Length: 373
Length: 226
Ligand code: HEM
Ligand code: HEM
Ligand code: SF4
Ligand code: SF4
Image (cartoon, rainbow over the protein chains, first blue to last red):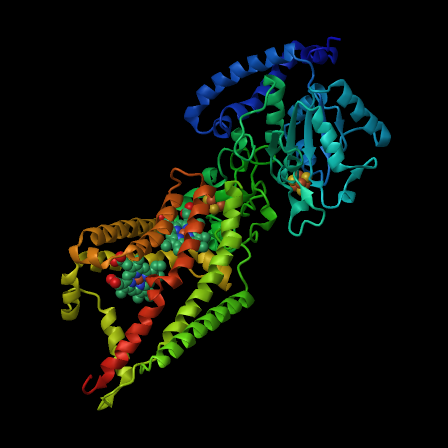
C-alpha cells in the first residue's frame, strides 16, 4: 500500500501550494536552528545574516522536496512520571503554526494528553499504530520511569517500563523530551522514592536523543522532529546525546550579563543596586557556566525573555540531576553536601588520637633507650 | 561516568572526603608536633620577656623589603626565591580568599561571605602567580645549592600547588577544555592539594606560626644559650 505523501495530505486538507511553501519556510526555520548554530538562526550578529538567508532559501527547497516525497511521520508520544509541562510548553509555544503543522498535519498517532480518545480506545490506537508503522515511528518519551517501585506509574494495568520497552522495539528512533525523560529529572531527585530512571537508562543499547530542560525548549523539540521528518535521520549529538545545535554552548557563553561577569560586577541580592543595573547573577547561584542549553539565544515565549534576562539566576534545569547539584541560590562553585561539624569533629578527634598514640609509642621508645628529652 | 558526573562527584563526595582527611591530618600533625615537647632550658635565663620576643619576631617577619638590613641578607642569598616566593604567596592568598568563585566555596562551608576582587585583577594576579611558580621551579632546578637541597617532595610540593593554579586559570579563560571538564579537574586538583598538605612541608602554613612563636620565645630570653 502506498501511503500518501505529506504534500498530498496537505492538499487533501485544502492547503494551497502557496500556503504549502510558506509552511516549508516555517519548517526550514526550525531546521535552520538545527543546521546553523542557534546564534546564526537568531539573526545575530548582523554579518551572519546574509549567509543565513541564503541557507534558509536552500533549506526551504530541501524541505519542500522532502514533504513532496515523504509520507507523514508517525509519532507515538508516551508520558510517564511527568507533569506534562513539556507538552504544555510545546502547545503554548508562540509558534503555533509549527506545532500544528508537525503534531497535527505531519505526524502524531498517540499522545496521552493531546489525544481526543481516552482509556482502552486510546490504548488500542497505540497498539494499532505500533503494528502498522513498525520500524517507522518516532517514539517520544516525556517523564521518567519508576524502576524501584513500578506501581507508581502504570497505564492500562501495565508498568511504564514494560510499555516503554515494547514501544521502543518498533521505533525508528527514540527521543526523550524534558529532563525527566532525559536524566530522571524531578522524580529522580534525592531520595528518589520511586526509583525513577531515564528512558536511556532503560533502553541501554539504543541511542536515545535527549532534549533536556524543565521544560524542554519547544523549538528544540520541534527542531529535532523536523530534522527527522526532512532528513530521515537524527541530528548531530553530543556526549550526553543532546543535539549539538541546541546544546552546543553554555548559557554563560551567550549570556547578556556576561560582560558584567568579566568585569566582576555582581548582584549581591535580588533588590540591590547591582540587581537593578542588570549585573551578573553568579553570586546569587547562577548555574549558567555549566549549563548547556539554548535559552540565552532562543529565549522563551517567542523570544520575549528568559530567566536570567528577567533577573533570576539559571537553575541549570537541563543538566543531569540539577535538583541535587547544590542549592539553587548557592554559588555553583560551592561544595555539594560538605561534611558537617560532626564529621569534622570526628576527623579532628581521630587525627588527634592517632597522633597521640604514635607520640606515646615514640616517647616510650626513647625512654627505653634512656634518652633524656 | 561522563564529565558532568565527574564534576558533581568532585564537588561532592571527593571534596567532602578531602576535607575530612585534611582535618584529620592537620590535627594528627599538630598533636605530633606538640608531643615532641620543649627542650629543657639548661641555663636559666636572666630575664625573659617572652611576649616582647614573640612580637618582635613577627614584626621582623612582616618587614619584607630588601633595604632592611636583615632582609638584605636573605635577599642576596637568593633573590628569585625571595621575590617569586613572595609574589606566589601573595597571589595565592588573594586568589583563594578574594576570588568570587572561591569566596562562594568558603561561604558554602562557613555560612557567610565577603566582598570580592574584580575578575580582571584576580586574573592578572593568577597569571603573575603562575609565572612566579614557574620561576621557583626553574630556580630550584638550576640553583646549585637549592638543587642539592631539593628532593622529590620539594618538587612535588610545587607541582601539587601548581595544578589548581593552572587548571583554574585555564578554566577562567575557557581554553582547550569544555567548562565542566576543566572545572572537574580543578576541583580534583584542589582535593589532591588538601590531602597532600598535612603530610608534606606544605603544612608550613600552620607550623610557620609554631616556629616563629617558639623562636620568638627563645629570642625573648636573655642569658647564655648552652
Ligand atoms: C574547592 C575549591 C575550589 C573551587 C570549587 C574552585 C573553583 C573555581 C572557579 C569556579 C573558578 C572560576 C573560573 C571562571 O571564572 O570561570 C576558579 C578560578 C581559579 N581558581 Fe579555583 N577553586 C577552588 C580552589 C582553588 C585553589 C586552592 C586554588 C589555588 C591553589 C585555585 C586557583 C584558581 C585560579 C588561579 C583561578 C583562575 C582565576 C582567574 O584567572 O581569573 N582555586 N576556581
Ligand atoms: C600564612 C601562611 C604561609 C606562610 C607564612 C608561608 C611561608 C613560607 C615561607 C617562609 C616559605 C619559604 C620556605 C623555604 O624557602 O624553604 C614558603 C615556601 C613555600 N610555600 Fe608557603 N607560607 C604560607 C602558606 C602557604 C600555603 C597555603 C601554600 C600552599 C598551599 C604554600 C606553599 C608554599 C610552597 C610551595 C613553598 C616553596 C616555594 C619554593 O619552592 O621555593 N605556602 N612559605
Ligand atoms: S522536565 Fe520538567 S516540565 Fe518536563 S515533564 Fe519533567 S518536571 Fe515536567
Ligand atoms: S548571569 Fe549567569 S550565565 Fe550570565 S554571565 Fe552571570 S554567571 Fe554567566
